[in-house]
Image (cartoon, rainbow, N blue to C red):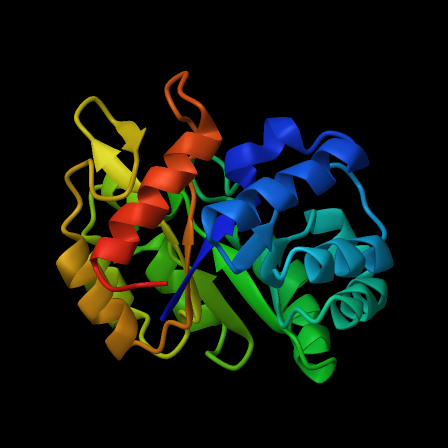
Length: 248
């Protein structure tokens, strides 16, 4: 398994192209070679390809707005072809307090998932804590996994948000084996705070074991909230801690 950086961590430094380019350089200088592009300013696919190549980086996953996925699917596929990215993600979808939008989601995104598959891409759904609400005896995440086949949709399982939802990240990695090519590594500290990998309370030994067994290719470090600390320093400490576990 390879480690990468989720750019949502440094989104405040990617609000225009010059600073975005500088941020790509800084992340590469830390040692990361794989990235997820999310939360940045708009960019042309050719621009991103050039900047990735310049810094020896590979984009392995994106988060694309829901409207673009639904209404501009072919353009999304072409753009991902340009910078060589297979995994196309949806970062968030609100299902409402009583999950009344579940059927609407399925109706809207089955065609998207199938079109992405036909175009050589793989649709990836990213969870938060809402997906661990129970519907009968199942969580919403389990219902999604039943509604969409493994060929249609994978899951960018986020370790922090699984734990915030009252579930076990390692257990869900096992449940979703075979459809977790990319996951988010995010540690959970006391007070429901996000932490540098290895500095919180998630049992990452089990996470790594179940991720590898389930076919994970890329573990992407994300820290949405760095508690006022420099996000580049947080990414660096996570990188070094993961290096100590033997990951590069």
